[in-house]
Each structure stands twice: as structure tokens, then as C-alpha cells.
Length: 500
Ligand SMILES: NC(=O)c1ccc[n+]([C@@H]2O[C@H](COP(=O)([O-])OP(=O)(O)OC[C@H]3O[C@@H](n4cnc5c(N)ncnc54)[C@H](OP(=O)(O)O)[C@@H]3O)[C@@H](O)[C@H]2O)c1
Image (cartoon, rainbow, N blue to C red; front, side):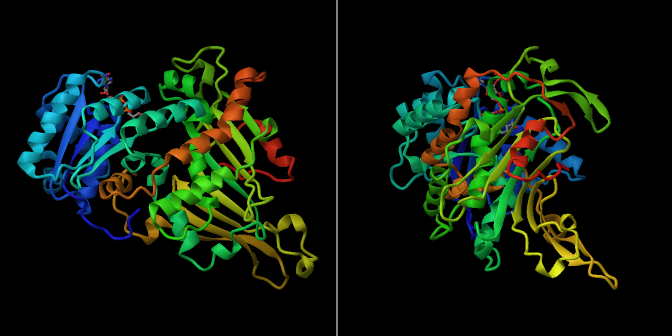
């Protein structure tokens, strides 16, 4: 996450999965937005690799049309000055990821384009492909000598999620990548870290004298992190049946939010310093017991006034599926800062609203001064970092209601990103791609972080595999999740914030 904007070095970007959804929906629009900010490499070539039958012109025009449609939704049209640097050298290489000859042709193509455009031999390989190809492509790039960094040139690899489906597979994938590349060449994406509000957690904590002194067990009662979706599987039943809410969301997205909130201050904003602090935090997480985790699956229900089907009735979902669509957990971090401060996490599909937030609840003030005020009327103070849908920071505290009596009321101070800043349009991948092009790995996951995160959830995955749930489905679509999730907090005398 660079603090100074500099043009990345000239390079080729090779996208594996060039005809896929990620390429058209997120990667190419992100490049366009980088062009808008003057943050593309001075000289750039885009090479797409995919087994679909396409010419370079068809690929380019298809991506342009899709971008144009997306921009039209916000009343914009494509600016050809911004599109030109992306489009001028687009090459489509039809090939199978699993065949050696794809890589010999790619090697020749890279040499040719480098000779033509003087790209300094720099290449960013983007694996916009299903995870089963990650190891194969990295291995074949390695065998073809395409990831060797010589004479000051860079060769980097972006890997999408999911990074493994349990601890063992994550370790195996890391080992496979590290046989061919050095850790510094690997950029494991968690797209949550591309979100402004998530990056802002570091600014909030470490750039302000106000917050850091109260960011500890002395002042904080507990933390609630919610990633709620109102959508169901959206036709991705096949994928979800193999994944479930825990694997899909917890060791990656939710844990990244935990790490940003809970990590110790790094000695510098250097990528290694920050990543070391995150990894250290994960090592301090108390092993999860079965009583610390709740799973759920949605039944039919009402969302936005519309009746929606139960998970087991979704397309490509088994009618007796035991896959969880909701998970809540209570995490304890055994270190000096957080001893005794629970982090409650929950995520799920078909919940009451789409909402991602980190809510920090401060300890109550002593009531000596307000003895006459009913205690239940006094809320504790909250700091709420909203990630989506609206990006904002809200501080809730108690204030005196105007009038002759000392009556208190919980009030809010709001900072909304879009009101304060003229925000440039973004799809959330801009920072991540830019950082990779400039060699800044701060927002990417290191091998040890990934493994530590899987290590935390591994005991849960194992025990769930042995004990099928007995009461699925256990929450209605449009609700706030299963009642067992409320019990998880009620045991500690606490309640969840409403999902809205
Ligand atoms: N899409 C998103 O919004 C999104 C968001 C976050 C993360 N991701 C991650 O990004 C990655 C890519 O997702 P995606 O949705 O873009 O996938 P996708 O639409 O399936 O794209 C993959 C592309 O690779 C092609 N392909 C498949 N097998 C091939 C082979 N053996 N040789 C050459 N080409 C082959 C596919 O062609 P055919 O389809 O014709 O076989 C397709 O064009 C995944 O890891 C996903 O988890 C996606």
C-alpha cells in the first residue's frame, strides 16, 4: 500500500483465464481506473491465455463492450484516451493451461513483445482461474523458466482465492508455489484488502494519537465483526456445496478484518513489518473449541418482501445438504493487548441485509454521576467501521437530551467516505494490482499467514466432518441467523448488533 503515487515499471501482464468472469468484471475495469489516475505502467502489454477460441481483436472488443456497459450504468462512456494504453498491445494466446506448448508459445510471445516495446523483461502473471489450476500453472511457468528473475527484471504471480480448502491443502499449495517461485514473487489476493475502509483501519489506528491508546483490553469490552449477505448462492450451488460459509469467508476475509483490527503496531509501513505483525496475531489466537462456533443453514423466507427458497432447494444443491451457509464464532486472542476481549465473528447468506462492519464496543462508564438514569437507557460507546454497503465510520456515545432534566441519549458522529472525499470510481482491485506492479506486498497474504489462519479453523472443520448438523435448516431467509448464534453471546451477557 504505497504512500507515494509512482508509475509502475513498464511490464507485460499475462492473464490466465482471459475469457473468464474475473477478467472482464474486475481486472480490466481496475486497469481502466488505474489509467484514469495515471497509475498504469508507462509501457504495457496485456496477454490473455485461455482455451476459448478468440482472436486478439475479439478479446479486446469484448472487454471494451463489457466495460462500456458497466460505465453506462453510472452514466459514463469510455474515454478512449484511457482505454488506448490498455488496448494498444493486447495479445490473445489460445492454449490449454495444462499443456507445455502453451508455455513455450507464451515464452516466445513475451520475448517478441519485449523486443517491440522494451518492457524490461518484467512480467506479472495473473492467475484468474479456478484454484485447481494454481499449482499446475505455477509449475509449468517454473519449468519453462518464465518466473526466473534475472538482470533486475521482475516476475510476479498473483494468485486468486481460494487458497486451499484446509490446512493440508494450503500447505501443499504453498509448497508447490515455493518450489518454483520465491515468497517475494507471490501475491496472494484477498479482495477484502482492496477495500478503502479496510485499508483505512490502519490509518485510523496508527495515524491518530486518539485511538491507539484506547485500543486494548482496558477500554474495549468486545469486538463484533459481521459480513452479512442477503443473496443466496446465485446459481453457484456447485461451488458452494464444496465450500460452505466457513471455508469461503472465515480464514480469508473475516480473519483479514480481525488482523487489521487486532494486530500490534508495526515498526514501519514496510510490507514485511506489517505482515509479520499479522502472522504474530494469528499465532496468539486461542484454539477454538466446539462451543465457540455455531453453524447454520437458511430455510425459505422473505427478503425485501420477496419469498426466497431454502438453501436445499437452490440449483445444484443436494436436497439433504448439510453445508453451512452461516457461521458465527467467538475468538480469543491470547496476548497482552486483547486478553479477555472476545472477538465475535459472523457471516452468512440470506441474512436480513447486506452489511459488512467491524463494531468495537467500549467499556461502560461508571454510573456514579447518573444514578437516576435507568441503566438500560444508557448504551455503551461504539466505534463502527462500515465496509459495505456504505463506507463510513460512526462513533456512538451518550449525550444529554436538551431540557431541564439530565436525560441521556445515545447519539452518533458520522464520517462518510463519499461525502468527505471526491471518490474516484473503483472496483476494489485497483490498489491490489497497482501494489503488485510496484512490488508492495503489504496487502497480500504471506504463506505463514495463510497457514496460520487455516490452522485456527482446522479443528472446527475436522469436528464438523465427524458430526453432521442435526437441525438444518435452522434460520429463515431474511432473519439474523440461527438462535444458537444469539446464545453464543448471551452466555457472555452480550447481544449482537442488528444486521441492517
Ligand atoms: N468472478 C469473480 O467475481 C471472482 C471474484 C473473486 C475471486 N474470483 C476468483 O478468480 C478466479 C477466476 O474466477 P472466474 O470466475 O473468472 O472463473 P472463470 O469465469 O471460470 O474463468 C476461467 C477461464 O479459464 C478458462 N479455462 C478453464 N480451463 C482452462 C484450461 N485448462 N486451459 C485454458 N483455459 C481454461 C475458462 O474457460 P471455460 O469457462 O470456457 O472453460 C474461463 O474462460 C477463481 O479463482 C475465483 O475464485 C472470482
